[in-house]
Length: 89
Image (cartoon, rainbow, N blue to C red):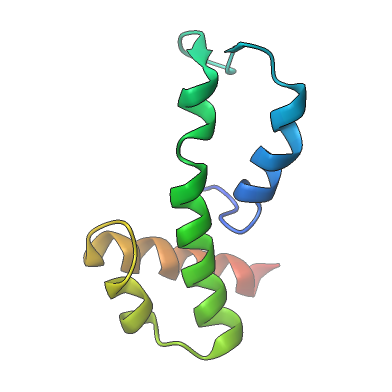
């Protein structure tokens, strides 16, 4: 989740999906398949929903971290970064 805009990724992938051809040429690395690009979308949507739950619905960071698709410590770190990013914008 590093330096990405977590809440924007699922929508961004949905927006570009119709325009992407059978292969993806990223800015660096090897040519990839569409599955490489779009398979993680469901996971991103789950994480983005947990972040929205914390930001807008009053869910605690601890609770949201326990129910994500990654280990609790990783979810907590990623969600904390998402919270910090949301406070900057």
